[in-house]
Image 1: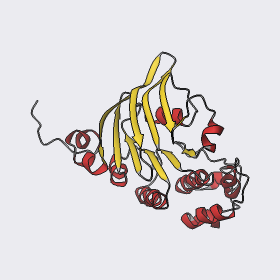
Image 2: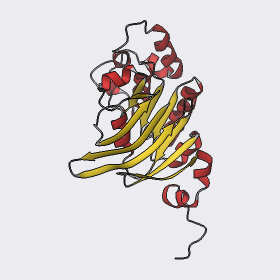
Image 3: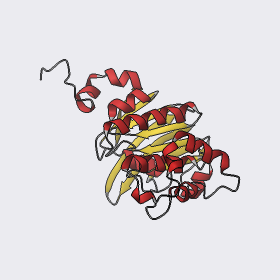
Image 4: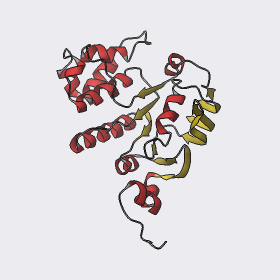
Length: 239
């Protein structure tokens, strides 16, 4: 569905993403894991057109996305749930959801019902200002808003950041549910354990490069991943 080839992203003279290539197969959950500054968010931002790549190819369903505006990319079926949620605090929950569908001309009723079924709390708080919601509720709203564009591929940037463990579990349950309903997911996440358990396929990024690839299960058992991201020491401690 999504194929990235030889992607490079720079900010000024600093290279954030260095010649990476990876793919996101249709219908799967794919995760990028890595430390802060590894280039994960820059990769997502370049895919959705918020950052212009220095070089490389971004193809979605065989169409080159480089050079297209964010609006054009969203219209092709890709949406991003940004890090930090970024809801519109002075607008109601319902208004925030409708903003997610700003490019649509068809009826929103069916998809609004879908979002409310996924997040009953959002229906209960339809007329509440988004800025008064808890962090977990704002994350639900950010995901729901993205779903209102009827995406084929939804990208999520650190959806568990700053949330209590119980809410994190709920968010990942929703990620699985969304995927089971036919939406492909590209997930950037520092909670490597949860991300790899949810993912069919995973990529490890370090300082702008992809250093490891495997299924979620394979990476969970990888000694380097265990030591770096899962808080587990390698079996071999010899230097």
